[in-house]
Image 1 (cartoon, helix red, strand yellow):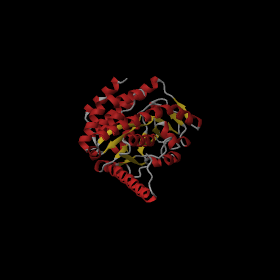
Image 2: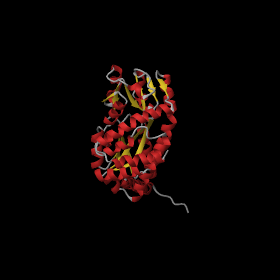
Image 3: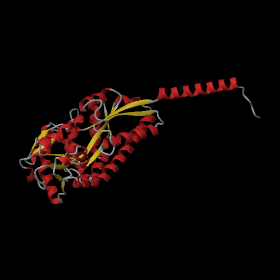
Image 4: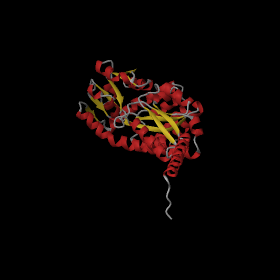
Length: 344
């Protein structure tokens, strides 16, 4: 049966329908939760793997929760430098991707995961964090110390390589007398083991320091060498696979407790998915980035297995001695080295 509505009746129906849609949208907004995610580096997924992770995490979380959870991204340290952002994530419902500079003042045991020359490649490094006893214990201890949670190890650029503007580096002896930019005091210890000196210099000042000769060299993965245009002021690149390049996704405890069981599960699944995308992207781009550097002014050297062993024989004991000086319990070191041995 066909029913006709006069214009006034139709108008009332439209108003009711519109009001109903508006109320439903308002209800959805009331239940939706926006979570701040802060991190270092430019908002460029091609050049900054942490931004790639953040954008994928945002997309996957919002799709999985159908908008119940949304992420607001704050790249380029917009919410503060490392220590400020760590204070925020500990005290307010939020997420933060922190480097060693953010984690280590609160949990120096994180330096154990950076023992140089501990991994043969991507697979062993990933298994170390995905399955190893050290990382399980580290996550638990970090939570006990800070109340916050380390949710993931975010791959940010492959393995660190040495660069300098003085001479090719093939063996530890080639470091003698050179001055290197260090990211932190653990890198200073490594350079000193090789006969060089190390000076902590902020990332924002690295290019100028290398250009003016304040430092002769530095170490970073190819991604960061390109990101900082360091190939313009560095001639020699040595692919020594020094350390796995990573950062750490940290979550506020209150945030996780406030989530429903379902949304927390979906968030954790999204973190794994976004991290897997990062891993594939980072590994697939390593050789292309090395080729780019070779085509743009750098002489690339790949050490032999024997040369890598010499770097390890000199650098690793020195780093372990430095860890002991930081009053880090030897049980952490033993656990990590055992895990690393088991994944090779």
